Length: 535
Image 1: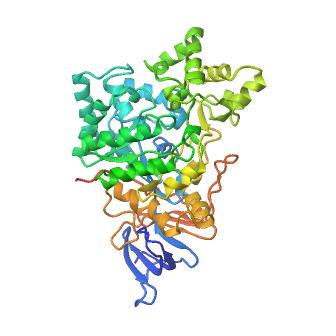
Image 2: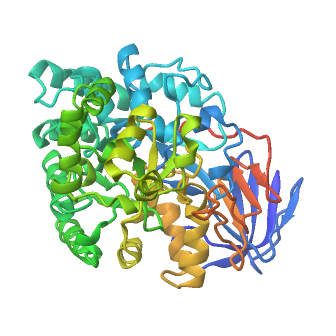
Image 3: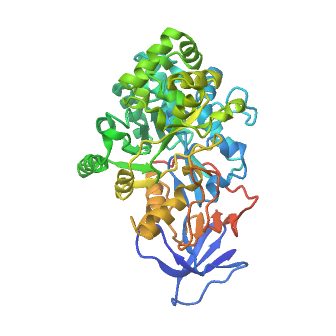
């Protein structure tokens, strides 16, 4: 064998009891699992002693924003050091394929707060336009594996533009062709960001038609739905009904119940899902194990303020009369961009800026920054949006711990970091989600057993992605594996030091090659695109 990992505690991803075994790897796959006392032990060219360590399948991040980071940063320790061996990209309805030149320029500007890649960013050569070309670019070699969701907002931007109106029959046909082409080229499904423009302009009938295409190819729909605030339960119900009409599998993105109106209502969401699942619906979800959310500051604005694209948004913000209308919606009515809830500026923390000259704002809430200047919070927010050309990212401190714990225990739950790697002070979930599940919630709090927690992070997402040879420690499966210390594994990242790497994860392998060895990142780029398999 190429490698034998001896004397390790195997947590195989099924959720069942762990066991002691030797695990042998050959040609990038698990060749033999020999349980303790079962017979001759395998031998190999190299042996690794796993005493005191747990061996699990590599973790699958079901909600990642590494679309450019994987290309820009070959090291990518933010995810590799957590034991992540596969990320799902193209989230929240906005990403970089399929595009034409116009659409690419617009999407680069509008999500620079998520990924960088703004108009002045030359760190990535955007030499693709189709989904297939983007996946081919990943296949040149990346730190971890990656799957891709077709972003519905980008598709609408391409075929319809930024107008808040129904698509014409010709435009709808164009969008359906783009979705079909992306799926045929290897995308695993389609995402939406239904509080982000222009994707939010699509009505249910339009989304249903696109989901029918997704279903034809055996993919799944992953919506960031229309409200996580005042209308959250209705928004979840809308997605369930829409996908059932389309006969399409549903995966709910960062399925949280945030804002004061939803305190204690995580159980209500789960009851809604249980009823649908009992009636035959194919549903899964992902969450991150933290209470605050993260997005861009411009996302807080009402949808009408973003109609026409980024340049039109900036023009409205610069006009005093229109800016006052925006303030009224944001602060007094509750803009749809802020989930129908009036904004609380003392809970909006600036986490990153596109313009380094604005770095003094980072780490402060809008309320704090405004107080320092002796002005109203909206004045500060408006000035930042204009000066940073909509590139500012934020943390939104609006979550509830009891909801986080209730949702993560549900049988269809999977782990997703929603990790935004951009900015001076990103959310710690980008660097800490998976060890935080293992250390804080499983070991320290006992919210789930370690075996069950590993299943949520491995086999369950692999099943949603329909991967036939990943997500389990099983003979014949790919040797995407993580070795961690159950007694010490923990997230190093905090809100004060968000880029700190985790502890207790000494080894990570992809296709049997060490990506992390003895706690250090190697120079191995074993990651490739993971494409949709035939139905």
